[in-house]
Amino acid sequence: MVCSIFLRWSCEIGGGRIYVHQNMSWNIAVVWSDDGIYLKLKVGRGGHRFVIPVLMCETSSYKVALSTIGATGVLVALFQMLVVRPLKKQYLRKKKEEAFQRRSGDITSSRKHADEALDLLQNSIQRSREREEGIEQGGLIIVKAIYGAEQKVANVKLADPLPIQGQQELDFGYIDVTNAMQYMVENSELHLFSNSKSNLTGFWDPTLLNEDKSLKIWYLFRKVMHSCTVLDFDPVELPLSTHRLQPESSL
Image 1 (cartoon, rainbow, N blue to C red):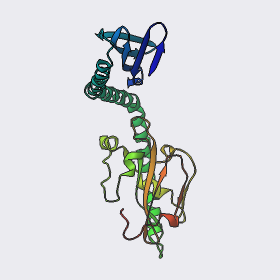
Image 2 (image 1 turned 30 degrees about the vertical axis):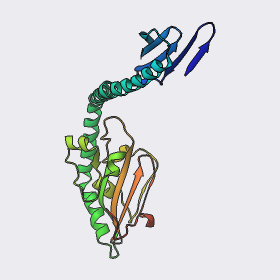
Image 3 (image 1 turned 90 degrees about the horizontal axis):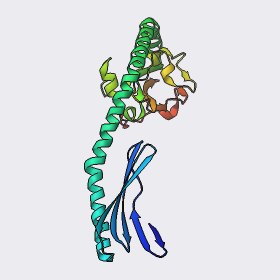
Image 4 (image 1 turned 180 degrees about the horizontal axis):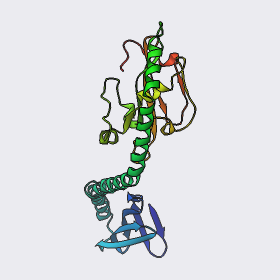
């Protein structure tokens, strides 16, 4: 609220700028003055700002002013719901499509290199799994591991199906890295330093907008189920007693 009293008086009441997207915003205010009551529609785009005054009435009655303020609030809420929100969704959808087009080449190349690396390592992966399964007390066996968009990874359960290679990996927002993690197991231990896991052998980034990522692992150690989730740049240490799941825990 901005009030000014000099030879003439006016009072302007309005909210902050509402962004349709990063380069476009709008705002509406009610001006109550000795000249009457106005609506000010303010539109900003880029570095430009446009103000459109609309005279509602020539009287300065406070009753009319209060009614105008109430009606304007309802108008703003409706405009936000019926116009701004759909425009925002359309803008975000377009940005996502553009990001996919830019990243599609990188995604295809990264996925190809990861698949080729795992194909070459199949024997080593199998030997690691058989070696750990052959330990009498039970070694470190990766049951399931997924990597991708943090919010989507967080909701995945052990029993959930893994994405099929191809478009489904992009739709799910995460990929299966079970074999890649098993390959890294040595002497019933697994250690990863702080670095983006998309650079690891058998990994690639399935997110379209370079979202925050995480790695979720379910593993058996000494025949007991363990689970952990680590952020993309966090180190990984397996096994840890804090990862141990209680029998009644939800997997």
